[in-house]
Length: 358
Ligand code: SF4
Image 1 (cartoon, rainbow, N blue to C red):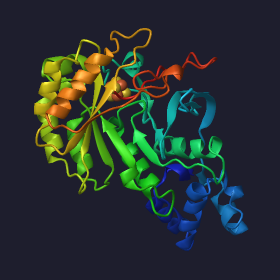
Image 2: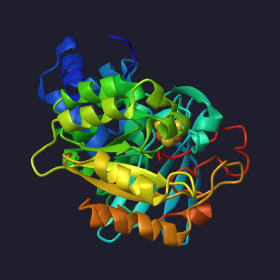
Image 3: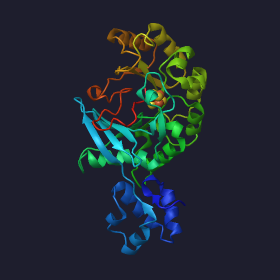
Image 4: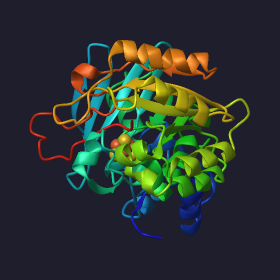
């Protein structure tokens, strides 16, 4: 065991093993876990109902890390964007999106991203490092703690659509999911969590075997390999046929379906032919299609689609019996919309640019 153990990045089983190694009774693990996750304790000293002798033993053997909230922006539509500073000076962004009856938190899993999608700001910024399980989980705890009033609003849904490709940080992402869903701790229902992937097919298949029934979203964004190779270089490794075959075989929970995210880029992938091809591609897959009109940023190579082309695209999908929705852009005025995130906070210019999954 590496000491000190960061309790915030540990599964319940790891904390139980740690407590057993200390020769302590098993119920101590449950107490510790409750303090760290259900009660969000900042330190061992804050765990006031633990015996003083036990707390003394813990000091130096374990720690509880915390993200530092460096900046936040509030958009006119109520969307909030948070910039967290990590211990090594890197920065990440997390976005809180209120919609009717829901409060959804969009989490990051990496500082930057290796996949370099052509329409995404993260593609421009490159990759710095993976987030640890504690850094992933603490985005949830920190927003709940520092932004939402105690006993007031609660985050209802989590989407892994922030900076980075979750399946490219596989072990840490899965560990974070196990922590978030642990009944002894935060106990977030898996059906309230969505994993969004750009199509790292072998990892998608591996994840399907983990038995964690979170919802799956796949960033598709193109209807031919030629187009997708250009927009999403990951397609050169795992082409559309391979990706869609993995989607067909994915072990969905009963009544669940895959969401295909499709960013509409003006006059690039928003033609009637694209819509018809999209309908054919997803045939036989229990799915819905989420259309996202692109929000251009200063250096982007692409523009947003014309509203009438968006409507036409949607109409073709519906006429082809596809379940399709149009996602309104949230937080556009604070650059928190999909593909728009970046560190624009004063004094944070040195941080890596950020973007959301398409
Ligand atoms: S869209 Fe997602 S996978 Fe592609 S570069 Fe951006 S963060 Fe990475």
